[in-house]
Amino acid sequence: MNVELPDVITRVSEFVPEIISFTEKIISNGFAYVSNGSVYFDVAKFNDGDKHKYAKLEPTSATDVEKLKEGEGVLTDTDAEATEKKNKFDFALWKKSKPGEPIWQSPWGEGRPGWHIECSAMAAEFFKEFPIDIHSGGIDLRFPHHDNEIAQSEAYYDCDNWINYFIHTGHLHIDGRKMSKSLKNFITIRHILTLYNARQIRFLFLLHNWESLMNYSTEKSMPEAVATEKKFYEFFKNVKAVMR
Image 1 (cartoon, one colour):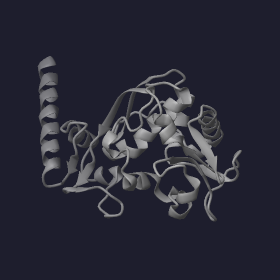
Image 2 (cartoon, one colour):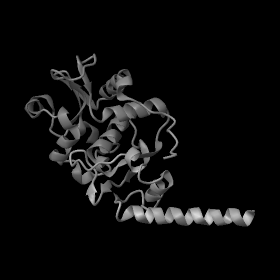
Image 3 (cartoon, helix red, strand yellow):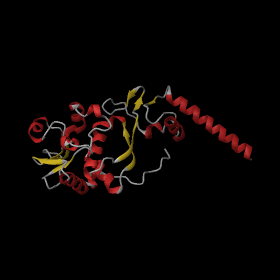
Image 4 (spheres, one colour):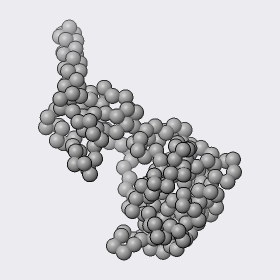
């Protein structure tokens, strides 16, 4: 695709000590608590005062329990929640491992990172000064993932602004439906490159606004991208002829 690699590529499994240290700092700042080998973010304590506000990106979702559970994924344990959490809106920073799950040693026992903490901890390793200028991700991650990232990091730094601009990209649709492995309608760049060249695919992206959904279709969107690429190709070919 002729896309340059990013300066840094991280893997969560290589940053577990940093995640543990990040979690310990949040606890020491008073915004998290240990319960039965897990560590939970204390949303009520975070909201207690004028300095912090939970769910900055989607305030109306702050009490949406179903969204919160979806954001926690398999970390959600309905039976344990009633006894482990101070309130149902708290989320896991570190979770006690269940049998058969990955395990790392921690001050709280054997466990693994929560779904959200790794992003904040890894960002802190490479961006030593804050606020960070721009953070981005898919629109479906606004809440709870990105809102939890913001809360964790503001709790860690004890600041009121961790990110200046949070931008969210639209979904990729395949023939009118959101691309999803569960729907089995996903497609790879490697496969598309057998049908179109890299310039044509890049024009497909350029023809869409970054915040809007983009539809990949061999009958509708790709012919427009191919025609646009041809127009540019012919233009520069004519420019070269004139230059000669």
